[in-house]
Length: 463
Image (tube, rainbow, N blue to C red; front, side):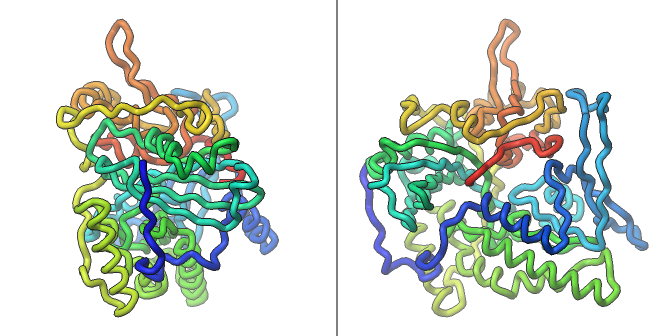
């Protein structure tokens, strides 16, 4: 594998990272929680918001009244156990949904209230990340590297990021766009293969991997933003899909959306309102800094999906330069078309991909790496990965798509096990790192991700 460095001068100004800080969002959020509590904000750690509390308006339409959080003690069959505790209903004048990408409550609200009607489907990528402690002579604090292409080639869109953090820690991440066609593609193994590129291997050799995690990333951008407000609440940040795709950054817009929502709600409550639509929030997002940020890059993702890496670099670069200089996109607004699930091709039209076996030094098998996500789920609780039809994985997905859940999951949750009675679909929900890829990419849309009990899941100390 070779390498070609894209010089800085042709890059649009919005791609400049100079002067920014490299931080651990896990550490930032823990610090923010302390600041919030000092201001009197109540935080409920160790429990998940598992249900939407709905109410009816006078005209019979639906509004969101709150959420249910903290249901505990369900047995594996879903019935209450001896230590069952019902969840609390938390009501609010306005409910802000900030679950991140493909949140289960946001998904329900968007579907029930048709918030995506008239907008393009949301698009996604799967981001996987390892934190490495590298040799001191290889560490360059503040260094940022982005790559595209290898080893994905024409199999999928995507790329990497390498951030030199602090204390010889380097964050190595790899993103695979989930609109890939070949059901034999194995995103996790593409990430492991990436680390054997000479440039990356030279950085990591002699180092130590100390953490692993994975999460879906929203990639639809401006075209895919749904209606952001609804009766009783709003969608924040990645729950709506506010990631700037070429920069692989969404935290800035998530924070701005929280500020805009708080200001809209404060003004509404001061005026004596409650439970209605905060349309001022929609306006603030679409006409303010968030909208301007997303508009400039709105054609990068569809251009890449349509034409591949190199043509999209040219087209996307021209479009971003034009937007930055004139405020208008030369390509206007391109559509995304299919959902990522619909983009999955049939197995008969593709060949399996032969991936090198992990060497245990630079590359690792999934289950070994999952241990470094520090994920934990109480085994006696119900499986939080729900199948609409339990027969679909073997009856439909296996013969038609070679059951891609075996490969697209970066935590080895799904297996097809052969025994005397034939193939069986096995869900190892204890491994789940809450990336949401299965909910997004399953070609039959048969898997629904729901919140597990309590605060179960991955525990990312420095991610």
